[in-house]
Length: 514
Image 1 (cartoon, rainbow, N blue to C red):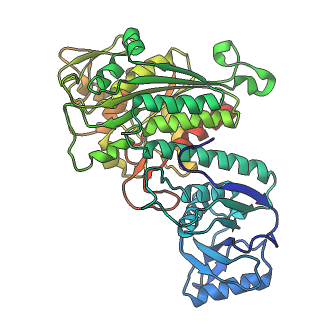
Image 2: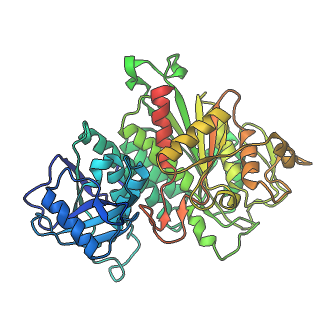
Image 3: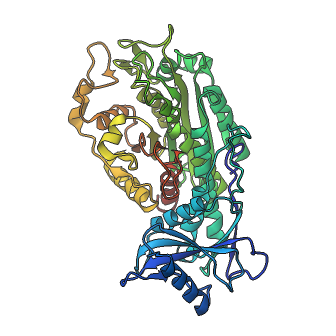
């Protein structure tokens, strides 16, 4: 997956032994654990002789390193063919290391290596895919909008050699690179400022990515949207000079399933999955305008759309044996003389009427249109993701997505999210909350009159538009999609790429298990 014009991921090669030549300028990344006596212990020594292991451990003790989680120490070890060794801590010794521990350690290592172009990593012997993902994402940078005056002058990471004795290591490395590049693509889109990513431009970038991946692409402009009755998308977007769009990306992978069976829609047995992502390229709140202090963070309000686009392209790149259809509504929510007003009534795609009590609850309006349209494809599963509510951050903080929807599928997706390190948490959708969405003039109101359970109320609203029989999940990523603080682990400041890995894990699981 090309991430042009954004981050260019380093090339990755897999080796079964430490190279002896041509690595004199490379840095060797070595995992280190904290021993029970407080002394650092090299955690994977298959590629090092006992003398080198001993030298590393002595040098670490000399500089006071303990092997605590994510502690880094740069060392010169005579006798090794590399320029230096970077020891990265994993924490207390254990029999098996969680993937997320390896991924975060690799990310910390990558972020600490300013000016280093080439690395060799032994972290990959502990978990090949996690190490590659962590290094690529930890090294993520975006300098597209910097002039030469402020752009970094130091060399960036361009080559990774992953040491591994695991069976099928090369194929696993290919998958890891593809996943990391998909996350980087989502980050690039989120980090592109709204001055350069209005709905039409966003649709063009989605089209370019989809076309390059061999996907079917359909784009509805504002005229087509109005004619077809997409009242939610039109209503949200009509306050902006940049008109809305709806992008549809279709991947037909069912033919790749064992036995060549088609999708269920073609009377076969392979599942059909609908993906939906909120694509508000900038959210002022509209007439219900947001406070100025943090409004610039709303450049990230299209993170759900970015993740969905990157995921369906990834599914095509790795040839998953199922059909995936992405429906991505895009709009800019602005206040103007033409903007929708609190008290207006919209007719959503499919005919449901909604009283707009707050124009800043706009995401659910464009998503409702997209959900109804996606359900016309008769999917078996529907997964929607969006930076939907500030209530998500109040309930779960900045790093944990809220997962709502059909009970069994919700729990399945939440477990998958936790397994890949994105840590989605299952949340309920109490039926009684629907009463809070009653309107005196329309079928529904877009907000409740209460200050409580805002994340759940939004989920209940979306549930009203899901067709009967479709297993569905809503992921609220308001906090996790955009890191407003400092970098940590393999997560940079700005766009995080959440929940690309969750979405892709769900697709892989559905492809394997139905």
